[in-house]
Length: 122
Image 1: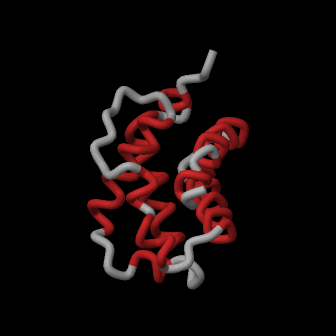
Image 2: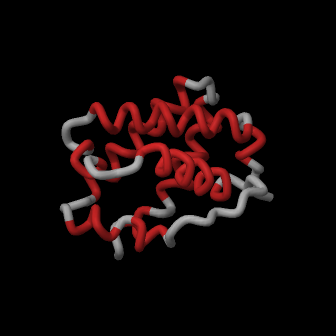
């Protein structure tokens, strides 16, 4: 049985707070910020929260672009494994900041890791 991580970590409010914290960290990271220079961050926060909620078992319907297509421009800008690793590191730190227990955060990161190949178009 797959844990309903969405509820286990605190649902919508926790995911929204973690996503906002994540993007603050990403925007402060000189190796990542260039991917977001022309991005509507409010819209991205909303779409990312929606995607992560769905990924973690929330009863949320993600209405954004398909994940591979959503990252096509970033791949053209050189998005690679090192960047993906940095994103995971920042999301893990964001989960910690909003109070998600380490063992649950690890499960979240594993679900996000499962999207690496699609994001990097492999």
